[in-house]
Image (cartoon, rainbow, N blue to C red; front, side, top):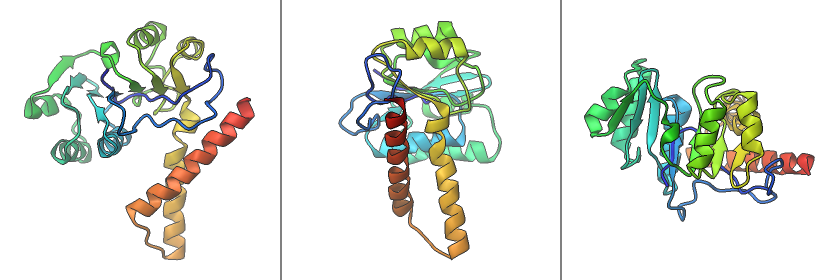
Length: 220
């Protein structure tokens, strides 16, 4: 199944009311699934890049006018650079991506009807309601990752947490990496250090593993 830039999933308990005891790797290069992305935010553009590096692919990117379905995946440097330039220019016309790369554009629609292993809502608060949550589950989505702050209504979130076969990563935990990397940046500046991207990525992995382990322990 494809993936949308708007969610991801770890392996979880049968009731999905507690984090899994083992770390999930939704971007594992051995997976054949795709990522579904919502919103052309910088976090989603970076998620597309990381997914491509690890062998997965993002197939949808959304904007205020609708969403783009790129079945080939947002996987090349050319595509990611194009999105970054759009972002830098504050260009919200996501259709331009579809026109340039031959992708499909769906005006005034959300991507939740597209099947994907991972869904990552990353636009606004309360953008996913119960009806959309049910569609996401019906699509066979395995991971639902809240990238933006509280993108899911309370009713929809309660529904998703009660469903078997889908793991929900709440926004506070999923967003912790961004806050952590900001702290690393401040550390570099204050100590006059210069870490490589690989070194920062390693430190981030340790940080996120610790967040997962602490959350799993607290929920046990």
